[in-house]
Image 1: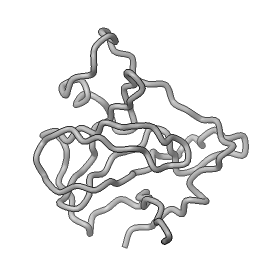
Image 2 (image 1 turned 120 degrees about the horizontal axis):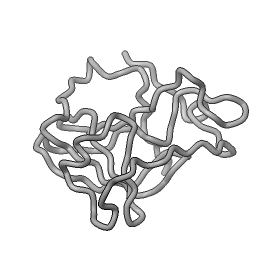
Image 3 (image 1 turned 45 degrees about the horizontal axis):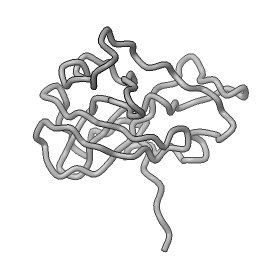
Image 4 (image 1 turned 180 degrees about the vertical axis):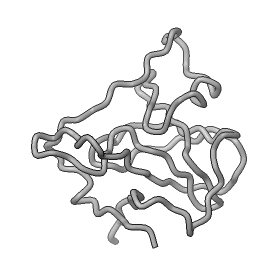
Length: 142
């Protein structure tokens, strides 16, 4: 069973770490799927108030991506530790086909709008092979 990182351990509201987006040569147009495919896990493009990331994996229930704003460990000054990794977030999915999905961030660090690209490079995943840095979205209490 994968280790679930608790939300209270994942981030603190007072932390100020925010990585810079990848700079594109033509920043006046929306990023293309080919440009997003070139991103490494945890990198992102920022354009017109949206964040563009590539999905790390997809299955019939979820799509997974490495959040560029959330790290697994932080120092007391709010900066990530040297060996911290990007946290893997998940959102709902109903297909394995390549596409672009619009989702709103659920992490404490950034609640912005994300465009998540599922490309031919995105891996299919089974639930038994989830990484140990998985963070589940917050549950709503009714």
